[in-house]
Structure formats: C-alpha cells, structure tokens
Image (cartoon, rainbow, N blue to C red; front, side, top):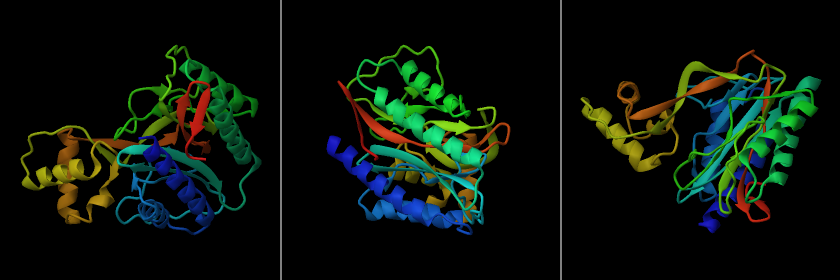
Length: 296
C-alpha cells in the first residue's frame, strides 16, 4: 500500500513539473489536459480524476469537454490540479502558474497559497486537531493581505475514494477531530483578493459513479457499466468515454444517468466576486511525529 502511494506521488510530482513548463500563451487547454493524463499513464499510473485546468476566477472542476476550444492567454493565472493512482491508491497535487505578465496581487496570492501549504504541512502529525490546520492556513493567507476560499477544503483519501469523508478546512473553525497515524490527506489552500467564496457555474464536465439504477435505455446501462468497470468511484470526464461510445448517443445516456442519480456531476466552480484565485496542494501521509509529503 505505502509503495503504491509513493509511486503515485512520484508520478504526479514529475508530471506536474513537466506540465508547468509547457503552460504558455496560446496553449489550448485540451492539449494540456491530454498531455497530463497521457504522461501519468506513460509513467505507470492512471489518472485519479480528470486533469483540472482552472483559469483566473474559475477555481475548480474545469476540465476540457469534448471539442473544447478554450485557450490559455497572456496574463492568465492557471491552476493545474492533477492526480494519479496506482491500484486505487491516490496522490493529488496542484500548482498555480502565471502566464506572461500578471499583476502584483496575483504574485501575492500565489505566495499566500504556497506559504499556507508549507505552514499547514509543518503542523501535521498524529493527534493534531483538524481545526488547527485551518487556523494556520487562514492566518498565513491573511498575513499576505489575501482571503482564503472558505467553502473549499482539503480532504482525506482512501483506496479508490478521492474524498473519503474528512474535510481539511482552509479557515479557522471548531473542528476537534484529531488526525491519526496513517491518514492520507490532500491539503489545498486557495487564496484570493475576492470575497473568498465559490459558487457553481452551470457547466459540468466531471462526473462520478454513485449507484446502480434501473435504466430504460440499454445504451445508458452499458455506459454505466463501463463507468463502474473503468473508474470505480473515482471522478471521470465524458471525453474519456468517447473512446468506447458514439458521441451523440453518449450525450443522451449521460443525461439519463445524471437525471436518475446514477452518476454525480461536479459543477465548475468560480470565485463569487469574480476575483483571481491561486491554489497549491500536496498529499501527505500522517505519522506519529510529522508527515511524509508524497508529492514534492
């Protein structure tokens, strides 16, 4: 188990560094997500979720839909969030990359998110209360004149489960749950000069299997079976399924699966006031006297 976590961590660390180096003005987002996901497979893992490329005020859950024509531009703040698994054991990491000339506030929020992550990691050990991690993150981000995104959190992970129940807050809140040795956590501070809240956008490009349901369409039953077989309970992108199914029929089946609550749609999230957002993330394994960062 530990070996699988460490391997997944090495894969995403390597791919994160490579992908950060190709982000540039004029790069189609579909090329970036395909590069990341293909490189994870080439390195011996599988994507734990679709590569997220969230630009400027878009904060999370954006991956390319089929036929995406979005392009990264000069002055953009690009949040690259990627994950790999090895036999279901997950490593999750993120970085923010400025493209061309960005203003001083963007650099401040990048520094705030990165330092908040470093400070949070330094507090993690068995017995620490979850609320203490949030306090450290919030105080660090405020010290840079920025606000944490209060309704996004880090999360615990288990085999085949990206969000396994424990939330790691980015603000000071009364959560007395104590970390235990062996916990696997994704710590991910978000910093902004906006109000520090995210809201749903109408778009949904990432999904997750929920449950078997009685379905009228035979094609929808086949799609659901493929989802469960290929991705278990991990998030997936509709574009991944176009390898197996006709695009037009797939659209109809996906609508039925959402309506029947067989799959869960993740809405793209944006900062409520339209402000820029920076993100940094590592995966750690909690130990008695500290933690191991597997995605450095």
